[in-house]
Length: 331
Image (cartoon, rainbow, N blue to C red):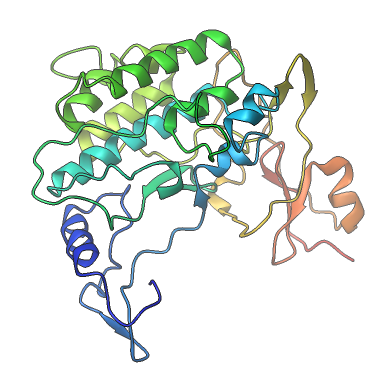
């Protein structure tokens, strides 16, 4: 809800249209609250809760808030894995298609209007106040080059390339962004299927060029989910926290400083003993380890910065992806 004495009629209409599509990648009106327009005597809309942060912070929290930071060598290369970027991109292209299905076109869908759920790695589009209605075709936007943006905050999808570790992956991603920004595609649907698949009709076993740089079962499952369910989101795919790889800043290589999660913390018990292992040359094997039955001290729990303490007191090893123990950490 935005403060004020009345609702934005245009945005209300846009959200109503989007919610009818039922996309996993759109911040829809909350089910059973679609008609609510007043909360405690004030104008309001009730939308689905998204537990995450805007995707621009993927860059901002890894050394590059603007292009000057990039030029100064502050980008933490390797902080964003190819596998996670591939998933973010595929979900985002799906989000553009779902927006198009609603008859809308939103050229304001930059990364500050895209939410990233860290616990599930789901991408969700928000803020449709500037979306244009009655648009049948609307190719994806905000894949532009920001190399001349000066002190302005980075918010283009293309700028995520600065965080990739591998130069070949980065070059392939930039080429994809140039295709998306170059008026090659007439619609979001055309862009999604042309980039995500290399076959017509589309087959999950035949990913497109960028999506097949490092073939694995993950992309096959994602494309199959897209074809059968309308969304490529299959849960967390990175196998670890998003910023926990070794990173390169300038010419030096150093490990990422492990820190307790900030803001809202997440815990999904179903993921505790099931880290998804990806087999690409930039990712490390994530060992599966059972929970410990031993109560440990708070200091021991977070020894070496490899774990964080959740709000309810549980210890969670971010680095290896498992719960340290069923008992609470002691003070």
